[in-house]
Length: 315
Length: 321
Ligand code: SF4
Ligand code: SF4
Image 1 (cartoon, rainbow over the protein chains, first blue to last red):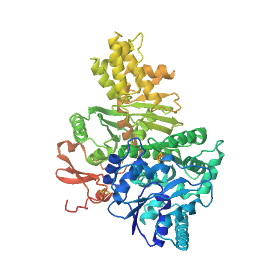
Image 2 (tube, rainbow over the protein chains, first blue to last red; image 1 turned 180 degrees about the vertical axis):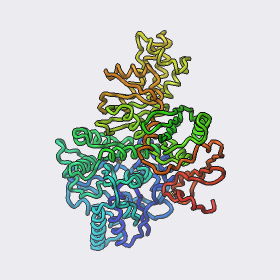
Image 3 (cartoon, helix red, strand yellow; image 1 turned 90 degrees about the horizontal axis):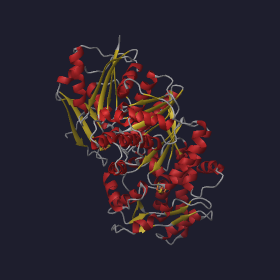
Image 4 (cartoon, rainbow over the protein chains, first blue to last red; image 1 turned 120 degrees about the vertical axis):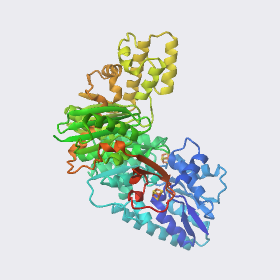
């Protein structure tokens, strides 16, 4: 049986784990294509226009898998930490997809919810495994395989390699960087080259070493966000804030780029918080790049170039 | 004395400046791009040639503006830089103490914040036309006033009208409304200036610390009404440099000088007599389907633009197309 995984949302965070898990259960895993024009066009046609671009792209990626697989994996990720939610759109995405007549293979959408119990993660995978086998032991050992794969993926990331390099097995970066920039944004924005306009490669070409949240231990990042007087109740907000604070406080970067999806309420709020608390008070260099399906590549290059020039001239 | 050529190719205007090592302007040209940047540059080169002859020696060429990659390839640029850096360099050259640069051109606007001679922050407007020159052109046309007189007429305003200027469409209908109410033309014009300034400050200037000295650059700086509206809104003097509309080109020239080039790549002013063509095609190498542009001079392929993967940059690469 072939299971398809859309290359969007938390793909960049969990794909190695999902792949190892399904393979251990004897499935063939097929990721959707890297976002291309056809996927984008289909996404815009089928999705609601108010959605943010990442959510829109889910439609196109699902359609890309349509004729290639028997079943599509689209987890309902409710929460990844204690009493904290994911973005509401994440929770609703399987239903949003089902509500449109896309003529696609069945979607399997286990609930992954760690809000109230430590075992929430495993429970989700167990529920998932039950679709394919009655053998609990087999599911357990597949889960262990998954964790192992995730661990080794995360270790590679800590060596400041980007998810794209690991997933594509390529090495894009050269060593002699003039400056370092931290990108603060969701993995599905930064590493989807349509959404980000290939930001990382543009920066690499300009002689910039790019750091992202994925290269730092997740727990460390979340701890970093605990300084906020009022706990943000969605994980993504904590991730962005924590990442920015960690990069700045540890002097890991010369400047930060905040990536905000057009129409994403949580993102724009966190951006204000980051500016107010972290960058403005100490004049730390920062720019915000808003992404949507209309972003122009030239506009992006101009902003990035100017930002890099500014950092180099500041040094 | 060494000479440097700076070109700023925007979507509305193409500006060309030749400067000496000290940054003094030897010649400055302001041309309409009219959708054909190559022709605009050729027209400019033609003028330079007829004034100085074709053996004017150029020691470095810098290109900026939205068509910088295309024109950079056509003329043989030594430096290709974004507009923010170019404007900042030119502004700093004119006034080393500058802390804020307001730049409003035909199709876009920017703010550059400088402290101690270094750019520390900037912003560009992305999509909205309500804060740019084309907005004013359009409204001037509607009121039957030549754009050159816009500012002078606006300054005669006694009771400026408040025009809701959040976006071009609203501003326009509000303006028509005010016209029908019988408001004077100059009052409406100055109201428009104030609307543009409000717009600029709340979009591009949002959250920026605007401190003097403030330079006002770009084509719109010709409009005295806007300058005064900025002065009133900010409560401080606004300086319009003498070559306000050429600052991008001057900056590009200064960047070429700064780059300390040994031998310039400049192809010379004679390219005006050459046949320069571009031909685009869609690469089907992968699903990105990039638009690739081939640039030919006298039928010979000299450069290629576009392509995310960079494989087309190698001019030898030539699969049967
Ligand atoms: S966090 Fe923002 S960008 Fe991400 S899915 Fe939710 S709304 Fe979209
Ligand atoms: S230029 Fe490169 S990235 Fe673009 S379509 Fe061709 S092969 Fe793909």
